[in-house]
Image (cartoon, rainbow, N blue to C red):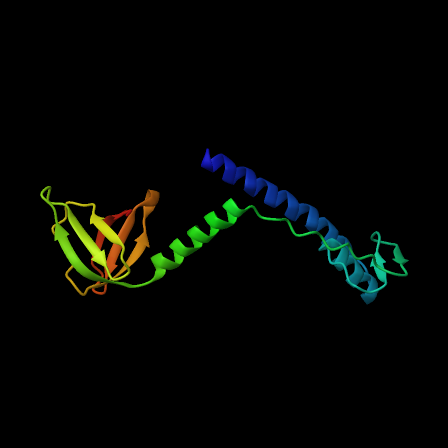
Length: 165
């Protein structure tokens, strides 16, 4: 499926290049510099703010003024959307900060918990024997399929899950 999509994208790209190439070949045959520049401008979709605009490959037209579009009204965001966006932004910022491990605890089931100076708690989500120590500086790294890892200053990486309080 992915290869079919990429193949279709490639075919569309090649067809657009072929059409654009034909327009450029026409521009190469023009000897007048101004007319050739106007032909290139049209081929690449450039619109200048001056009074002269190219209508076709051979005809130019003088216009008195160029109309500017009316400013669009700004959409009003719903409070729920703004709140969700702010929470997502705060989470991204919090995940990018370096945290310090202030406490490492283990429960009866041998689950290891890392408590940080920011008040966040993470549970070790792997059977690896490697662990972090108190005062380790850690940073969150996103993994594949929403997996999260804590990485300390030495590069030790442990898969974790954040405990919501």
